[in-house]
Image 1 (cartoon, rainbow, N blue to C red):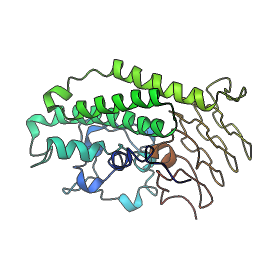
Image 2 (image 1 turned 120 degrees about the vertical axis):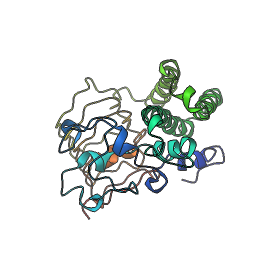
Image 3 (image 1 turned 90 degrees about the vertical axis):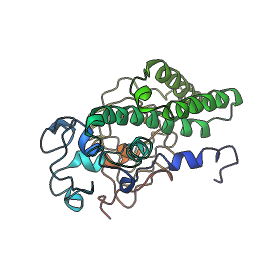
Length: 277
């Protein structure tokens, strides 16, 4: 389906929410706290560089991450927060050459990550409704988000996001409710679907938001307008499944799931190179 002019309004913004590691300074490889439970072979303290990080901020074992059981690295996506933080606050250097500021830089990176994640959902929400009042609200939230991102580093490090996040969540809830409003079976009771077998089921318009779906089997499923907002899809089987029209999916969710060449995904997401052909 060809997008209309309104739906294309934030196409450029969405492009900026795609990761570009070459324009980053390895922030995720330093700032994040990594644990075995999140798919890493060993724990790593926040602020400590990964032992595989090169001096040019590339990864020494990038082509061998799967072989070395770095599932957490393969799944991770920063929504473009790494390059944005680097470009805004490190235009002439790196966190290494700004050692006195590095802790604050890492803090800013985490805040920018949260803001970019909310931008991702807001941009998609804008395309999912034709309600002009709701679109106006989304416009205002996106504008507010961009204004926060333009603040000086000392200011952005002190940002409090609970109220803004609550406003974003309210919009996303309205969008989700509108999409499933005509389907009385859209709400599935419970949030724990650990290892559940949905093989070849028609799950169109179901609401799986914030659900635990680790190792669930969606093989061959139809998932049109299915809501995956915040769902944990680690090791979920999505082989031969059609997620092309699913809503509120992120690259991290796709990266952490198990798909193949027959898996259909939304056009704004990228097929992982690690998926089997």
